[in-house]
Length: 94
Image (cartoon, rainbow, N blue to C red; front, side, top):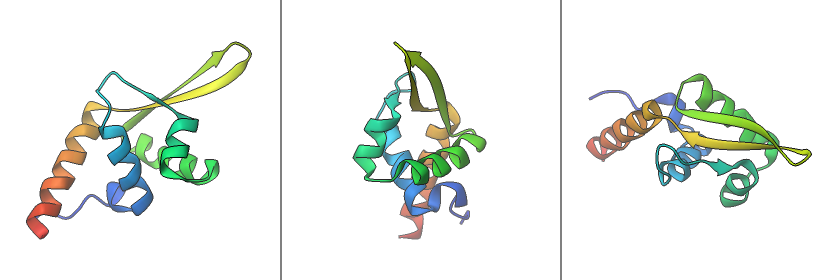
């Protein structure tokens, strides 16, 4: 049996991936909405998003809306594949 993906396996990152996996590949969620759904602090969420982005599992797009910066987060095709593999491995383990 393959080892569970350590990038996804951390509780906070698993929650992030679960939330983003509900979106389509070309859909994104605003950072504040994701933070609200997961009940995480901005700093904690940012740290976990960076790890997921470094692994290629999510993408972050920073834009200016009016005069304010906004960040949108989405799952990548690699992220969908990694999350599907993680779920299969977890089911095998159980």
